[in-house]
Length: 266
Image 1 (tube, helix red, strand yellow):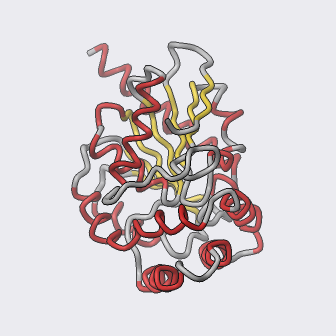
Image 2: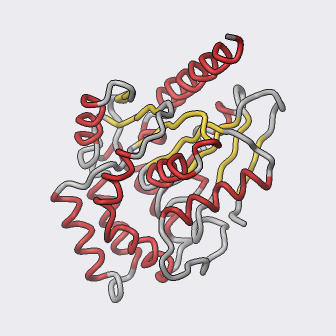
């Protein structure tokens, strides 16, 4: 089973499950856990090969479907029937996959620094990574990616948090995760079409130069989706502007809980 930490404050409180991005770990939520525990039961998970979770879990043909199922296994182990899910970066793909294949577990989605489409710059970046991943040290590639995705001086803490977490990975695990990006654009297109109508809020940094525009376009086309843009924040907005991020996310989850309670009484 994946490594996890759970903080159960009160059985009647709703659960919020946090999913980190590729190369990160559950430690990147350190600016959220204390505040969220005041309002919810909290679960943070290390995805396969990350943090303290076991390495070498990959089998031929594994995809985001298998990765997301391992998160569900943790919920089942803890007897959590339903949760709000908060993801960041590549973790938003895990969360969206989970909501597509296991919607009965999902109360709402909060997608931070969401990756929903790759533009030509991102495709080129990933192509370089795929063609060099076998012989270039993965930490060199990861530092390059982190700098391109989070280039500003104000993003330095976010870059360091992800780079320091990535140091706990090994080259083989990095290669397996990177391999998932080979067919990611068609997969992302399908994810956007396979929505189960679950409450969804995107939270994007104003300075998330690679990924913000596709999210804004999607929200313009679909009025059921929400978008919060955090000023002076980049791709990892939960670290760049934690106070604003916490306030906005907690308020949204409470709003959804209020709607759920109202629907139950009708």
